[in-house]
Image (cartoon, rainbow, N blue to C red; front, side):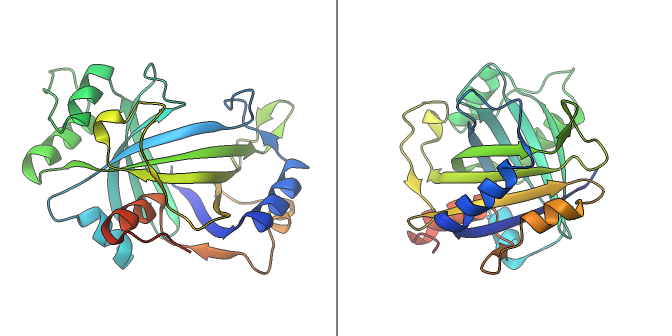
Length: 238
């Protein structure tokens, strides 16, 4: 199922104010740790022509990109994901990835194909052979996730998530992808953070009203793009 996804870049004080509003109505995602947030780390891939980066910069639609994702640097749960973006909506396919295979990818290699591999990994493996898909950037950040819940369960008709992403950092130290001490650089200017609003069929009016702020501006650029732009230009995003 495609999901609506909107991103907003703003200063820390603005997002802190919005988070207080959200906190009064929505609930912290039960998957968050006792700290109220989790650390997300994604290893993104691009081909020999930097097609993913250029399509993002040009606003090409639809566009797709592969990534490997872990939470809190925990190697026990690793996902290979293919994210598709089209007209303000996203579609994500994922499958488990073994630690052994991730280690091969971290070193720039291509894992061996197995007879029981599913279609997603086969497509990924094929792209590595045909268009030289390789690690392009590591995106790391801390996420505070809120969900709309009733009676202890996420409301399925909307599946609303409002997340606040801070300390967004970029790295190309691929061999240290799982290391808690990954060498990385901040992507945004001092005090800037990112809010994302995601939902399925519709966004309830009362949540929409919570998020209204005159100085808040939507951005079409992904964290992947911001991190790669930093690596290519050496300049942070304001």
